Image (cartoon, rainbow, N blue to C red):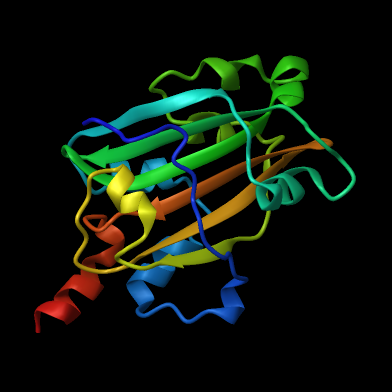
Length: 193
């Protein structure tokens, strides 16, 4: 798959879960599941893979910077990892993870050399990481992400993000459920009727 650019990023407004209406219970269950998304995806497919689009130090948006570091810090170096999580060859999730370079240097060098290993393997197997609350986003069918990933959606998509706190550091994980994701199972049945 040829990509237009890296990093792709996620443009849009993030909402607290109680401030936005998710269209069906099955999708909401996927969005609000606090367990490992990797493990959940692996449970519903025969072959799971991580397609790394890019992983390096990149600029992040001012909003991402404030969410990750707070208002007082300026110009912190951040590793940006963008991947597609695929089930049986289909791209199910676009994930964007923001990892402070200082955290990688001081505490967790493994995060800088993940390759095609799932980030969740580290986050959910190390009890020092604590997942904080979710924020949700809804992206329309004309969102720039689709063009960047060469996807032609039939419906908008939903995503979530949360911080994983580790001592004084945080890692941000954003996950957008792409149109063929099993998260939309009931939504697709609804549209088919």
